[in-house]
Image (cartoon, rainbow, N blue to C red):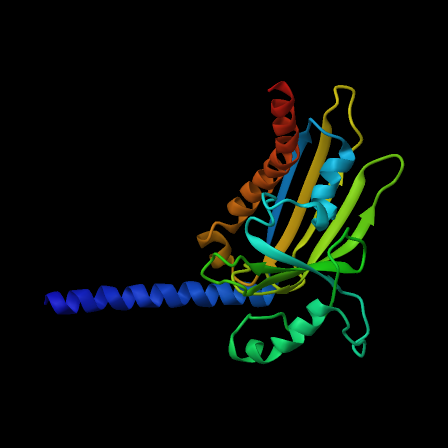
Length: 247
């Protein structure tokens, strides 16, 4: 009797799980991928607009405490190039050496072959390849490729940066080509604060995964935390310099 009772409810549970899975798949087929949207609005202070702007647009000026470098190793690549273009940099040659490894180890390297270039300021057509930090369990594995799509630095009005993910790797929650983020940094206000606005949108195939993993909430919180980290990153050297001058 107990066995039949347990078997009945086990069948009910399995049926419910399958029904949810099928419904989720049908929603994807009918309406397409599920969107994840986030935004953050922050007021920077304690430095110039150009100093804060560099923390978004110039990886060569990032310190090890930068929020991106705390979680990933970064290399710069040329995203817009012909398929027949030959690689010439040492970084590109290293990618060729690792090609055989990529076939054996999933996500060891990106599938798209992009020319590696020297780390420097972003501009349209350039991008970044992010890999998991050496200290993590997924050490060295490919995480994602992000391309600079637009970069505007007008004399008047806000600076603007648009980045798009071209390829997703191990641990990346969103679909290839789906994540687009935009950053705007406005001129200083009368009290010296600098407004920064970040918006982003990405897609996933499963609405159940979006809900279960808390992607919407986590993305929103990550955007706000990123802004605060940038504030700390720029302000910290100035605080240390001030403390040393007072000693």
